[in-house]
Image 1 (spheres, rainbow, N blue to C red):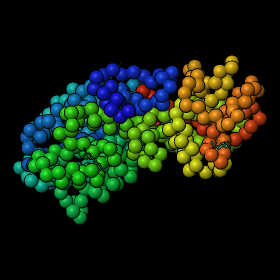
Image 2 (image 1 turned 90 degrees about the vertical axis):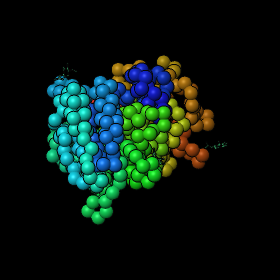
Image 3 (image 1 turned 60 degrees about the vertical axis):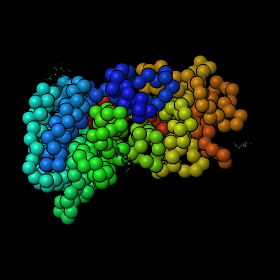
Length: 392
Ligand SMILES: *[C@@H]1O[C@H](CO)[C@@H](O)[C@H](O)[C@H]1NC(C)=O
Ligand SMILES: *[C@@H]1O[C@H](CO)[C@@H](O)[C@H](O)[C@H]1NC(C)=O
Ligand SMILES: *[C@@H]1O[C@H](CO)[C@@H](O)[C@H](O)[C@H]1NC(C)=O
């Protein structure tokens, strides 16, 4: 899945999600619609060398050059601001988050700023990260762009510093505050130690090197940016490859277990009022993820029971969808309890019910059986802007 997303980005063949594909919605992958606040933190100490700096400038320009809107725009909210910090012994803010107001600004600004390698061997990443944290604090958190995800992209040739100059606590603080950290190791001496250390500060899965296999560093950074841009409103669980690992590959789909019992039709209405729909279970993986999600939600107790989006319309079993879209006919992976579905048009709703073996589907009256339910909504991402209340 990850690979196909990256390939789609590289080859530029973007397609909006089509529910009739009977797959779960991936995160939006249109780099032109990225909406983030990003600070690039670039090591310009002697060890980086001039050719290193030049290739960083080229990488940065290429990551956004695919058409990302740089700066702010009053009519199109999906824009990305990019700041630039260079560091050696000390950090210097070459561009704050308001400096570049267009891609052309970024292009010339980045090449100008990264035109000189420093004469010092000292390279304190903690200072660079600190300057990035400062920019977010002054220009992003608590502003009209508070709800834009924040990403630091570190390009480093060394990992130095202890005590006050240790980069680890600064990185941890940034991540606790909700920022993502992408690292790119420029291991100019090739001893491997740099990568091991940078892995410790990167958001899991966002650690790269300038010698990425297949030369696809740009695609990997873009992929990390689009995953960072893909998130759910508060209280929703984002559907992902592993429930236990919240850094595993994310889908563009958000799940909300609701612990206030209702019968099937009112549950569907309540999801619609949240701009959501009753959840689909196209696969066993999604079903199992939902079981784990409800099992860790207050108000859900064994034997688990909850409504999902499967329902019968004109004799066909179909999955609920966002309002206005056609429902999707049940096609593969069937999870009916033994002896179900009951052949009766007066049982058109479906709940999951836990029995001694597993949690399985049973069709029920749409107005008489009250239980908890699961709403699902598209994630906020490049295809789907969310306002500052996290409203979809
Ligand atoms: C803002 O976005 C709109 C819609 O994409 C575009 O037509 C307009 O040129 C943009 N304005 C600026 C200042 O970039
Ligand atoms: C990223 O970090 C993980 C975990 O430390 C490691 O297994 C992986 O090889 C690293 N990837 C790169 C490109 O360094
Ligand atoms: C549990 O599984 C066994 C064997 O597959 C089956 O005979 C039985 O009916 C199942 N029980 C329930 C409650 O689904």
